[in-house]
Image 1 (spheres, helix red, strand yellow):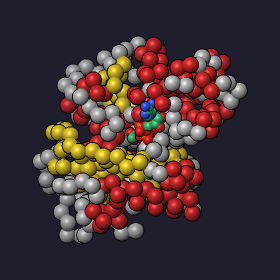
Image 2 (tube, rainbow, N blue to C red):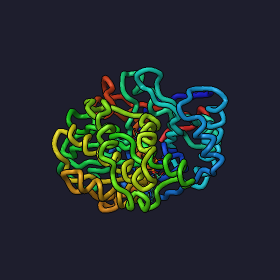
Image 3 (cartoon, rainbow, N blue to C red):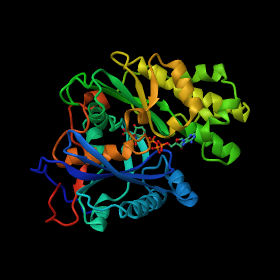
Length: 378
Ligand SMILES: Nc1ncnc2c1ncn2[C@@H]1O[C@H](COP(=O)(O)OP(=O)(O)OP(=O)(O)O)[C@@H](O)[C@H]1O
Ligand SMILES: CC(=O)N[C@H]1[C@@H]2OC[C@@H](O2)[C@@H](O)[C@@H]1O[C@H](C)C(=O)O
C-alpha cells in the first residue's frame, strides 16, 4: 500500500472538498461537496448517490464482523469500484474525504476496520484523498466513533444556533451529538458530547428483509399497524450499554439479537417494537447530556420514517425536527462531514476530542494520499 503521508498545508482559505460515506445500512455511497476552510462552512455544493446492487450488498453483508480474509477482500473491491464510479461524476474538487465501509468495530479490543483503498482512489481521481479517519483516535484510547460531531459543531454555527442543540443521525446505528455553539472551538471542554444511542434502523431492516424480503419498513407502514411489546422493550433497555457514561460507540450488529427478541411477534408488532427500541435508546441517551438541547435535529434515513419520528416526539422532552427545518440536507450530512473532516486533517486541525470519542487528547485522524508526490495539498 502506497501511503504518501502529508503534512498540514500552509493554506488557510476555503477549498472545495468532496466527502464520501458508505454507511452501516449498506444501501449505497453518498457523495457531497462543501466549501470550507476547516473551521467554517462557506457553502454546500453538489451531491450524488451510488446505490449498491443486491449482489454488492450481499458481498458487503457477508464481510460484516470480519477483520481479514477473502470476504473482506471482496467487500473492499465492491467499495472501491462504487467510489470510483460515484466520485468521478464530480469536478473542480481540491480534496476528497473517503470514509470507506466499516466492516468491524471493536475499538477496545481489535480496533476498527473501514475498507477501501484511499491511495488507489487518489491516483484514480488525480486529487489528494484523506482516509482511514478512525485509527489514530483508537490508537489514542478513543472509540474511533462517532466522528461527525466536529462537523455538527460547524453546522450549529452555520444555522446560527446560540444555545445547545443536538444532532441525531438515524442510519443503521443511531448517534447523537450535543453541541454548545457558544464555545470557541469544538475541542474546547464542554463544547461537544457525542455517542452512539443504540441501534437505529439495522435490526428493523434485518427483520423486514428476513420476513418480507424488503430492505426497510417504507414510511413505517408496517410498524404503524403494530403494537409495541413492552416486555421486549424493557429487556432491551436493561442492556448495560444504556447506563454506560458516554462517549461510547457500537458496531452495526451489536444489537442484532433484538430481531430474535421479537421473533414470536407478528410482523407489525415486531416492526413497531424494533422502531420503539430505536426511539427509547435516544431517550436514554439524552439523559446523559449536560442539559436538554433546545431541539433535536434529525438526520439520516430514519427521519423518513414518520412512525419513528412520532415515537421520538413522544419520548423526548424537547422538540424534534428533521435537519431540513434548518436548511440542511439529512441525506448528505455524513458525506459532507467527511469532506469537512478531510480539510481539517489536511490543515492539521483535530477531528475528535475526549468529549466525542473518549480519546485521551484532541487528535487529527486520517491518512493523506496524494496522486503523486509533487501534488500540493488543499
Ligand atoms: N422512506 C423511508 N421509510 C422508512 N425508512 C427509511 C426510508 N428511507 C430510509 N429509511 C431508513 O434509513 C436507512 C438508511 O439510512 P442512512 O442512509 O442514514 O444510513 P447509513 O448512512 O447507511 O447508516 P449509518 O449512519 O449508521 O452509517 C434505510 O436502511 C432505512 O432503514
Ligand atoms: C465505526 C463506524 O463506522 N461507526 C458509524 C456507525 O454509523 C453511525 C454510528 O455508527 C457512528 O458512530 C458512525 O458513523 C458516523 C458517520 C460518525 O462517525 O459520526
